[in-house]
Image (cartoon, rainbow over all chains, first blue to last red; front, side):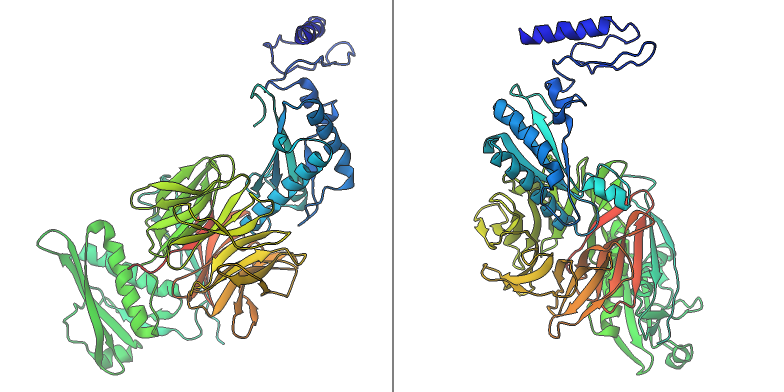
Length: 178
Length: 423
């Protein structure tokens, strides 16, 4: 019922904006700034990966999925507590949802040590989520080490982007990001 | 010390490589303090086959940095020819090898040779190797090993093999090649990363970590049959396999109980046993050659350092103290030294510790060395390094004097592992 309402709201927004190509149901919303100065509003429903839009809408705090770390460190810094807390709150309210935490490192140093370091980073995020009420079986932590860099560069700004843990969601019906 | 520097580029097509464009080049810089002058005469017999065998022998000896090749001036000598010792001595050769290559009655190839000492005027020995044409270069490697051992007193490693991971066109290829990088064959192709290959002591299998299940899982892979099985696929990460010297067990790193910790497991995946207990990261185990101890990396003291524990577990002793990042310990097969990667001023470099004196020597001036691997004679150390943003392999002599680079233009080469002596 709620879903039906969301879809009709979304259609209402799309109809009001004739330059927007009509996406297939469940397709990503297209933002149009041409012509009139209209602020695009996303009306819920599911995104392309079958997740609720509140997890992926750029305006939602839950769309912030990355926690960044200092060199050789695996403590969640204070500036990321709010992001972690938002995800914990969602997991508490939506017990059917699961998350996969992927830990990553920069490319410097040993691949195997980095694999363990990435695991520590993922574990630190998992621990924080569980402390804030997420259930142990809702959260899995894995490491990608230095093997899947988000930024393929070889300088410090690339490395800083790669010292990271990402939160991936899966809905109760099995659809999602992992 | 007179520093000799020379560069030799050898370009070969990889016969069995997946990518037709993959070209291997070897670049040598530096040489031993005193090189043994040796001449390899042109071998008699089938000219085409002889050229391949002799070319392989000469390239192997040259590449080792321990020999100075004396030009035989087009002289062709078979293994039974009378050697004019004074003439070869006058030419500057301390030793001369002569031989022949021909076909046997059953169509295989036989390479015969003999090595002579020009100073003493005596034969040092000889051998005959029968092979098929696909293995012809291996006959050359065997001859080079024989000459190396006779003249240096240590076994040669030209006939051994190396494994490494090639990343090209978004694919990861686990490749096996001759020690000179030629004759590469692909054992495994995956769209997900492959890391940490290690050779079984018998040289027939590799253990490695594959991400094909979207997480690190440890496999053992039989090279001849291509059969592979999972050794460890627990919750969390499964990584850093290391063979026990008897080939029965693997030391592995699992995060199933929380932190990355050391365990041992039988090769079939049974008999899991926890070896280390720490609140931090324990990883990169390697057995000492006698199997009694395990060297590993741990951050239990606040920064990653190398430690040593009994192979059955117990209390750990710290091994490295200098610097804030010492990782990837690899004990030498002769048990005398420990190669590892040290971070100094932000640069990751190959270092070697003499285990008796605990003296540490940094062997390279590079910035991104990784994954050291000793040759089975403990003379050279193969590492992954980076030049111009591209991964390549480098072999460095244990005294740091000789350096060889091995690169493939078509992609990144990483995670080298030097195989054992062929039985």
